[in-house]
Length: 111
Length: 117
Image (cartoon, rainbow over all chains, first blue to last red; front, side, top):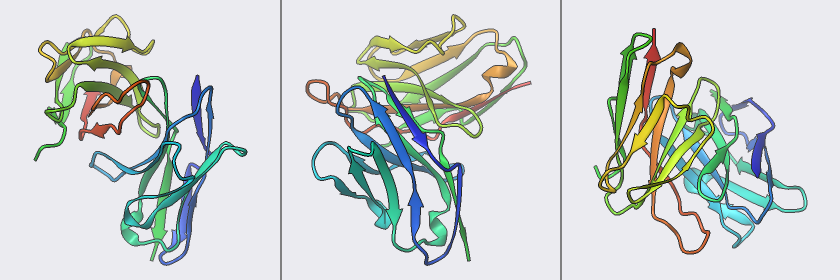
């Protein structure tokens, strides 16, 4: 079985400051991990994915995430937040066939 | 636009009525998934198809729910005798089956928001 815990339901940052969204996972086998973003009234969009290649994964819009097996973590970071980053972010772990989503972190970006 | 499409985008119905949603996946994708997302939560897996075969169903999929993918292309999700607890966003996703037990990226549609009064 697999599960995902997003440690913060809500994160607020100022524009231009770093973003850190935390995610811990549990999986009974080597997982693939994803971060998806959901803007209001829009579909889920893949930000980045880890599939057992490099542990530091770069995604779209300047986001990146580091897979740390020893800590079972896959935190999402961005050096400098932009207003357009305000959205809901989901950490996702693969099951045998379907995806298991975390409960989401709402990122608010203050001007 | 060659992405995943869903119809309708919004559905309001009275308790006890039946509703049907449609999903058109990306044309070359052979896997199709249904998820349900309630307010403040992440999407939860309901069921998935590989071509026309329904290979897995979640325990969330009660007897009132049925999904089909008759020709391995579009899919429908029907909810019979709707209840207020069925109010949610219903998401469809598609992907290519990867070799072995790999899982390719899933592409999501915009969802159908169901409100049961």
